[in-house]
Image (cartoon, rainbow, N blue to C red; front, top):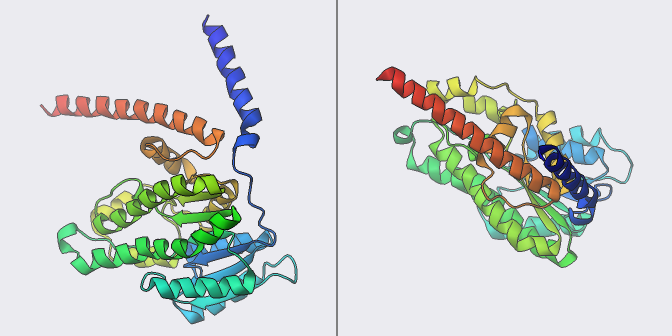
Amino acid sequence: MLLLAAAFLVAFVLLLYMVSPLISPKPLALPGAHVVVTGGSSGIGKCIAIECYKQGAFITLVARNEDKLLQAKKEIEMHSINDKQVVLCISVDVSQDYNQVENVIKQAQEKLGPVDMLVNCAGMAMSGKFEDLEVSTFERLMSINYLGSVYPSRAVITTMKERRVGRIVFVSSQAGQLGLFGFTAYSASKFAIRGLAEALQMEVKPYNVYITVAYPPDTDTPGFAEENRTKPLETRLISETTSVCKPEQVAKQIVKDAIQGNFNSSLGSDGYMLSALTCGMAPVTSITEGLQQVLYLLMGNQMEGDLSSFGGLQSSGMH
């Protein structure tokens, strides 16, 4: 009986796998596509732009620092695959004025066509104990990390829905899946991105527009180096339990998931386990994601049970 049940389960999974291409989002073709990357002058954003450019996309880089933008433009152009590709640079703070962001997006679309993929990568991290952080720090991180993703997305969504094609990527963080010591301001702003993405995916899925939320681990970027300068000791010790990833590696995974229309994008064993524990009611955009989510839930329940048992043993030992 057990063998029959196992055979039935295997057959069912194979059937789902076979029909999934008929139900899953059609992959986005990057050759000739217009990709806008905010925060694209350095770090993960620049690497995402390079990865898309390598696949034939036209790129609009959006960031505040003009010098860094021009330097990034030169680096990206080294990876062109044809002489028609263009890298457009626009200097603007995406977190301050929606009308200004909307205008620069319109300028980019006039030059390179409608936006096929928007990657919201502009952001920053600041750490510190809750009572030591200035209130302005909470306001600043919510402005940059959250509103800095809302404004560009709001500027492109109408055209994407009208064309019935598009991808919007929100770059959150593993600290947007799990609150950590010293990240009361940062984690909150990254959790907000997940809430936005989940609600937005429900609205735009009927229009063939798909959302991807990326949860990169600690990544070797200028922003990470700056963040380490002010980390409390406890936060630093937590961070040191995991390895630091290369931005190129993170970028490849994010672009791959965005092309496929996957809602979640994580990297490595740590990312996989966090997804297992925190998938909750995240939107499912393909049968593959649905199966993964079931497995995540099963894994999460098992891991929570193991942790509870471990905690009980610790308590018994302490008493």
